[in-house]
Each structure stands twice: as structure tokens, then as C-alpha cells.
Image 1 (cartoon, rainbow, N blue to C red):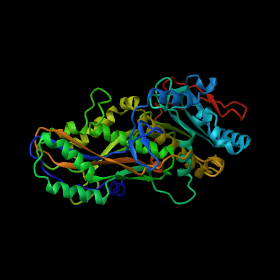
Image 2: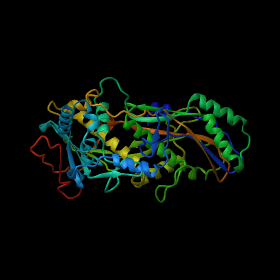
Image 3: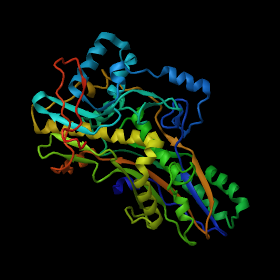
Image 4: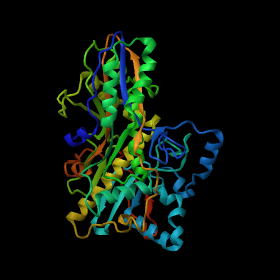
Length: 465
């Protein structure tokens, strides 16, 4: 993570040594609502909270409102291909036919991109002035939060809304941030209030830990959310924040272990001897193998598990990029190793994988347009006036959460921060080449009719895909 973003991801909180075997960690967390995303709600004021479970009546209504795919799209496919050029034409035709109400009446096959639930390949076709996305696809159904998940495999389907946001980042109208992401920061006023509280605190034992936790929450106050590279009123932005929020809850043990072998950061920190616990941060970042490319740069392979958990801390002098503590590294390594299993249980992490894949697809499209005059470039997909995204509440703040946990020895108080950081241009420019023995791109001849914007393909002629 860059130094500039680290500086935005929170500040060092005054530390206090506690008497007795207690470990206290103060965390700023995001939240959830009835229009929830990944189990997180966003109210009209932009306050983010953990969403309460839907009532049976609410869940029934949510499932009734979730549009079903067409019978063709509902068929399971190991490799379905979408033509971005034809998709744009189909969307344009729909909007022209339906008029001003067209965007509110999108066919579910368009809204959920033919049921594609992962992008394995981005195929550049300059000769056809097109870019293809290929991956597994099929029907979807509502989960227990009202959000769509693939009927087989449980991954969320890709959404047209998110593709629009990704395209508009890659092809900006004006200046934009140099990365896509989010951060959650304590306010200066909240930090000062926490410092005053801790200066008054002399001893803490197990009996008073709950009171301390509530006092810390009240002193810290709301935490500010900052978004980078994407419009705040989009579901793309909400998904970024929701994924970061869920990671923090898991990191601090506020949610139960999602898979066997999971250990939260407090489990690791509780083994420390008494001493300073520096401000830690964990964030989502692309892995080193997230993207590979053919020598001709016309076939791009996105790794099925493209994310990792990165970590760093700030030193007492406030310098970023200081090596993380041993426990922070242990948590990051464990979380990265278990992330594929966790994403199957916590779908918002699979959503984040999809967001990265869409951002990469859009950047690959931009890179191809810069290399060939025949390469396809989006037109309608870039136009926010003719092709608007759904407007949702902008994530603005999160309430803090204090956690007090018995430890092996005395400990200190620290804040935990994090975020998401995607740099699609760097990933594309630095992608390593596919080796000759690696999986080959799918064989896919498009249907003759330009109205057919998606079709089935053979995953890999070698059978290794």
C-alpha cells in the first residue's frame, strides 16, 4: 500500500498500559441496513452498520423482488463469453426501445451480465473491434440477506452497474484518483477525546472492561470513510466499504470464525507479553499473480483467487510503511491463505474479487485501445447521462467499536485500520507472461447474429482449464 494511502488510513492512537491480563482494541467499523450489501447496511445519512437479519416477511419480499434469469442464461456453464461491443449495442437498443423508463426496467440477463459469476479471461479481439469476458455462469437466487448468489457454487453474479463504474474509472472524463479503494479513519477530534479518556484511566480489570469499552466508543465518535476512484453513490463503493468492514470484524473477533483454522488478531496479540501494540492495518490488495498475459497481449488470465491481505503499521514517529509486527504478519498470512474458503462463506469477499476483475477488464480495454486503432472502445458504457448507475446512499461514516479481551499478560490499547487498494493500470502494465504450459484461453466462435451478445465456449482445448 502506498505511503499516501497509509497516511489516510488512520493515525496512531495514544497507548495505555493496563493492569492485569486484558487486551483492549478500539476499532472503527462500517455498518448495514434493509438495502444491505454483504450483510452491511447504509442509511440515508451514510452511516454504515452491521445489518440485522431480515425477518421472514422481509426475506420473502426480497426474494420476490429479485428477478430471475431467462431459461437460457439459467443453464449452468463452465465457460460463458460476453462480447462487450455487443453488450453495449444490446443495452443501447433496450434504452431506445423503452425510453426514459428503460434503465429501471433492465432485463435481469443484462443487469447480471448473463449470469457470469467470475471473469477468468479477458480476450482482446482487434480484428472484430471487440473485447470478450469469459468465465463460469448460470442461474442465481437470493441468499438470506436478499442479495443474489449463483445457484451452484454460491458466488455473486457480476453486475452491469459495477462494470459501468469500472469502465468510467479506466476512461475518465476528468481527473481521478490513481487507485480504486476506500479507507476508514478516526477523526482528529475523536483521537483527542480518546487520549483524554486514557490519560484519566489508571487501572482496568475484567469487571470494568465493559464500561471502558462503552466509554471508548463514546469518546472516539464516528469514523470517516474516504473513497478513491469511484463515485460514492454507487453499489461499487458500498461493496468496497462492506468488504473492508467485514474483514475488520473478523480480524478483531467480533464475528465467529468463518472456517476451521481461522484465528483473529486478538487471539494472536493475546499471546504477547506486556508492551506497546503499534497501530496495525490490514487491507485488501491484488496478489502478485492476479493477472497474467499472453505474449501477444490479447489473452489475459485473471487468477480465480486474485486477492491477498496486506499489512503494515506506522512507527511512533508517524512514518508509514514500517514493517508490521509479527502478529500482524501472522494474521495477514493466515487470512490470505484461508481467503478462498472464507469467500465461499462471506460472499462480499467474492464480490470484491469480481470488482477487481471488472476493473482489470476495463483497464485491459483501455490499454488495447492505446495499442491499436482497430481496438474497441466503450461509448454508451462511458456515458453517465445516457447510462446512469443506480444511486444508493453514499458511505460516509461508521460508529466505533471497542473490544476488550483477556490476554496472557498486560497489554496496550491500539486502533486498527484498513481499506482496499486496487491499481489496475499497474497490474496490467506489470502482468507477467503466461507460460506455455499454463491454461490456454477458451475456444469461442461468436454467433453470426450481432444481437447475441453472449454465448457458450469450450473452456480449454487442452483440458487443463
